[in-house]
Length: 225
Image (cartoon, rainbow, N blue to C red; front, side):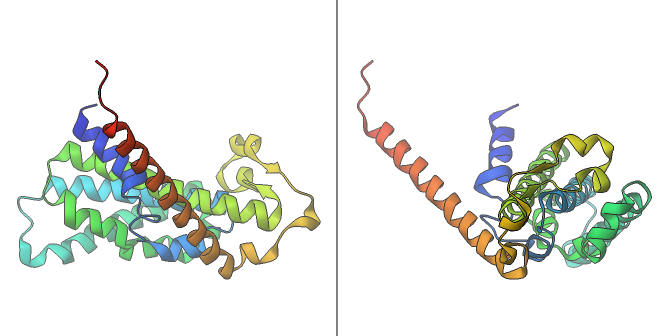
């Protein structure tokens, strides 16, 4: 992987994380992170849409005119979301029932639209797909992490019902970490979503600041070579 692709990967996963840095796609981030399983499922559905829309927009970027680009982006996004919606209904029906209305709402999710507008419509095919891949993975990571924190504190479980929603192969990741009566209910309610999101954003910024200080200190040390 070239340095440019490494930069795209690092930006999508961490530096330009859709939730923790850009604070896009907050509607599913708030509503669908009551458990790690739900967050992972929503993140993966969005990941597929971002990769597909990035590919198509980059492929046809030379024929998409400036005047109608937003309308075309919405149509492309709607087509891909419909495909994902029908596929999940057919093959992951239990997860589909849990995610419900939030799958169609991916059409107007700011994150895919932002990547189409700012990157895919201006870049070649491969960089656009790489950008879509790591942007989607970063979004999935954020939703899964939020769901895991809320689930562990609120219910004492981790990836509960993963085998029912994602398939029998995911039975091995289902865990109970706390007794049933030790959960903090507010963490799986809407206020808990805002609290966890805020704490994770603060944690990310503290990590970034610490890394930046270390880099500055390392560059300030005179070379001994």
